[in-house]
Amino acid sequence: MDSKYLIGSNGNARGLAAVFPVKRKLEPMKEQNVIKKPNNYSPPKQPTQVYKNVLANRKTSIEQERKALPVYHCRQRILKELEAHDTLLIMGETGSGKTTQIPQFLMQAGYANQGIIGITQPRRVAAITIAKRVAQEMACNVGEAVG
Image (cartoon, rainbow, N blue to C red):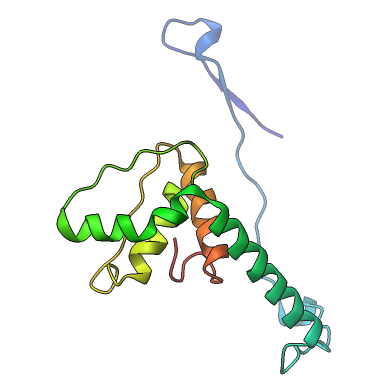
């Protein structure tokens, strides 16, 4: 393989870089080279009873987890205060449900009818994790009602 070396203007090794020319020619795949396998899978037309039971149990456990959060018991007060004031400052311990529950309270109360409810987080990973959790609690996929 041919290579050329470029040296920086001052001649030192820090400016050294290797340049390798590409000599391969890529051709598009042809129809006869593609292996076709028959698709024998078809999803069930109706959810099975086992799947329905799993979903019901998951919904029950998520609902129990939500009700165990401290902010859940403050729902009515939060909505009442929001009717009286444009801005609320809600302080609570880490894990009390502020980030995951309050947006759901607002959505259920109709605050998202004319737009969206936004949540900010200092880190992207935290925002993605929150979106996944809220989507799970709302029984939807990220990118539908949440995300």
